[in-house]
Length: 391
Image (cartoon, rainbow, N blue to C red; front, side, top):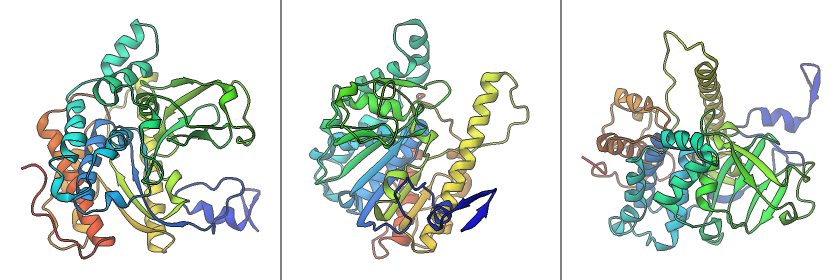
C-alpha cells in the first residue's frame, strides 16, 4: 500500500492514476479487454464536427470504418457520429462507392448544418419561448439532420455500437445514450430507449455555460431494477439534468478504453489562446475559466493515452487538430503546414455558420492527419492518398 495525502491507495488505484479513464468500483486495472477496434470522437462544436468528418472520410477509404466495434462521441463529435449511425445501413462500405453513398448521406448533410447558426438562435428563442435553450438546439438538430429518428434507429450491436456521451450533473458521472440502453452506473439503466436521436445529441453537445443543461424526463418505472449502484431513486430516475459529454470525458475515451485493445482517437479540441485582458464580469470570466480547465484536462488525458500506447497497455493511434503532421513517420504524407493546422484549431467552439472554405479546410485537415496517424501506427502498408478531399 502507498500513502498519498493521508489516504491509502490499492495497487489497482495506483495503476488507474496513470490511465486516461477512471476505474469504477469492482473494476481492476488488469481486467481482460476484447480484441476489437474502437473510435473516439472528441468535442469542439462545428470545428470538431467537420474535422471528424474528414477523419471518417479517410477511414472509409482505408476499409477501417466497417471494422469498428464501437464509436464513442462527445459534443461536436456526436453530431457527426449520430448521423453516421443513422445512415449506417445505407452505406456500401466500398471505397469506390464513396461518392455515391458516404458523401451524399453523411458529408453533405453535415456540411449543410455547418452553414446554419443554431446556438445564437437557440439562446434567443430559449429565452423568449417555452422550453430551454437545449430544447431549441435539439429542435434544430431534428430539423436539419435527424428528423424523428430515435436511438432505436441506430445499428444493431452485431454491426457496431454507437455511444453518445453526456454528463449527468446530478450524479457527476457519464450518462450513455445507445440503442441497447441509456445508463449511468450510479443511477441505473433503461433498456431499448425510444429517446429522439436529436435529444441525445443535444445533451451531448450542451456545452456550458450557455447551452447547458438539458433536462431529460424519464419514467422511474422504466429503469431495470437493481442496475444502479446507489442513486436508483427519484429524483435521479425521473428528471435527469445533463450537460456536455466533454465536461466528464472530453475525448470520449471512457466507454472504449476499458473494453477494447485498439483505440483510435480523433481530437478536434481547439487551441486555447492567450488573452491580454481577460474579462472580469462573472459570465465571461467563468467561460474563460472553463476553457482553461478543459484545456488542461484534455492535455492530461492525451498524455496518459500516449503513455498507454507506448507501454503497450493499448494499441492504436491518436490524431488531433493541433497535431504536427511531421511527427508521424508514414511515407508520402499530405502537405499540411503546422501553422495552418494551428490556425484551424483556433476556430471558436460554436454552432455558428461557417464559410465553405473553412469547412473544406477542416475536413481536409482531419483527413490528412488521420491518414498520417493510421498509416504510421495501424496500417503500415496502406497506400498514401493522392490528394485531399477538396482542393
